[in-house]
Amino acid sequence: MTFYITTLLVYAAVDIIACIALNMQFGVSGLVNFGFILFQAAGAYTAAVLSLPPQSANGGFQQYVLGLQLPFPLPWIAGAIAGGVVAIPIGLVVLRKLRGDYQAIALLVISIIANIVITNARPFLNGAAGVSLVPPPLADQIGVEAVNTYEYQYFYVVISLLCVGLVLFAANRIANSPYGRSLRAMRENEVAAAALGKNLLAQKLTMFIVGGVMGGLSGAILVGFIGLWAPAGWLYPETIVLFAAIIVGGRGNNWGAILGAILVPVGFFEATRFLPNFGQPGLIPAFQWVAIGSLILGFLWFRPKGVFPERRRTFPNPSAG
Amino acid sequence: MSLYAAAFGFGLVSLAVIAVGAVGFTMQFGITNLINLAYGDIMITSAFAAYFLNHAGVSIWIALLVGAATGAIFSFLLNRFIYAPFQRKGTPLIGMVIVSLAIGIMTSNLLLAFVGSDNVSYHQNPGSTVHLAGIILTTEQLLLIGVAVVLMLAIHALLRYTRLGKAMRATAANATLARNCGIPTGRVIDAVWLITGALCGMAGTIAAMNSDSFAVANGSGFLITILAAAVLGGAGQPYGAMLGAVIIGELTELSAAVISPEYKAVVAFSVLVVVMVLRPQGLLAKFGAMAAAG
Image (cartoon, rainbow over all chains, first blue to last red; front, side, top):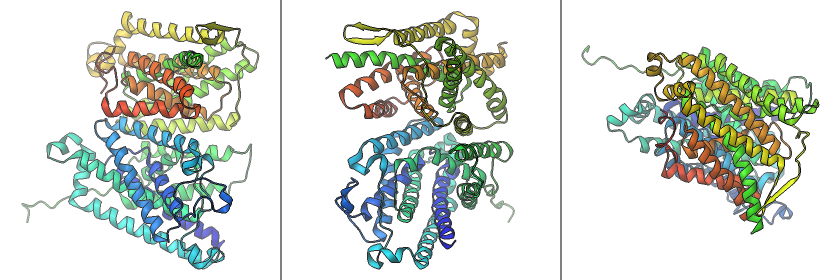
């Protein structure tokens, strides 16, 4: 039971970080990043190959690059950096000239291409099977047996939650700063924001990188906990779940993103896990996706601003004082 | 050399399949200004409708018509009961994209719940093989190419020489102005969903006929290929979509022969990315049958 609770908490931390990252892009800046899961995958793969031993280890049953066995905080930091680095070329291709809805489609296509490439290029990141046996953080210092203790599980929860705090702090600082105001101006009306001298491309690219860094970190945390990462785990519908979470929680509001992350990916998928099995295998996952779709439609129809709508920012009338 | 000639022949078949789907998709977008990401899932649903009829003993060619009808009715109802109400409510373009993606995921998973995830194939007779200058095709594949050519000519005639086509072009260019000029834009849009839905269902069924077997999971692959062709040619431009289909269809098959079949999708999409960088409006944005969308 303890393992179940800690697992749930780590998943919640990962989803919260991912939702905050996506909320900074979609909710605050108006960038519809249908390829978000790609950045999480970039962070996860980077953290995995940096903490794994060289590929000849474990009998050499899997192929991957690097395998540097770096000590704990480095793979996570590198994972976050990788998410940001991947965001730069993609952002430059997609954000420069394309119209908003084209951008969304281009990102969707890129995320699917990336998945196909990684699946087929086995020597790079072990192809469709994915990398496995990723050592958890500090495993080499405390020994492999110690990893399966309650203390270690709670330790993992604590460092994950620390990362959540860090990400939330950074995200709120950005959203509430003057820069955040100009991001919201861009979201509301690009032409007007450009006319006021805002460099839209620079703003979009910055938020793309910020979201990429946070996404990469979430991937690194997840891969350290579950120990494996494969293309089947980052198909494009995973991005849609995160969008559903933000639409439900309230886009533009980081607290809403947190609530959405707890309600949709964690609460929803965990709650339906306890349904009795009926019908053919795969029936329940199919209905879960149908329910995710209905959740998106229902909220967009009845409550497009979500459970926690973005706070309407007002300014005191300067002439009144 | 014969390997390339054969690959060119396969390219002809796949470009025919892509062209039918891409023209339907791009007309939907050009006239209704809605990027329907459920398109691939409607294709696979239609293919399965044809599959059940085909396995009940009906000829695949009649089942193809049923597939087209399924796509038409599905798309029409989808617009009437989901998309149009959301648009009337003032949902922004990007919100509509999310709505259509949600519909797509719901469609494919409902289908999955009914038919399962197994690969299936049609009862069909590929006919004798025809050799022509190194190109080897079955008579069925030749017929599929013929169907695509006839459909493309029909779309050309519809847009150029009929009142309905003229009304569609007017609606695409400026819906408000078209309505003020007395064009019943509501009925035009209904017609667009029926026609493009039929193309969608047709494309799904012939894509399934052209592959050895198919499953629900193929829907997203269909969508991506069609998106690539439509965006390559300039979204909203039927002739651009035809050109995009030619490029994507030949490129995928030829690169499969030159490099490796695993990378054929990657090569096609890389071309798409290059076009998005160099010419984001698409290849034929200025010369299309319709005014540039948006």
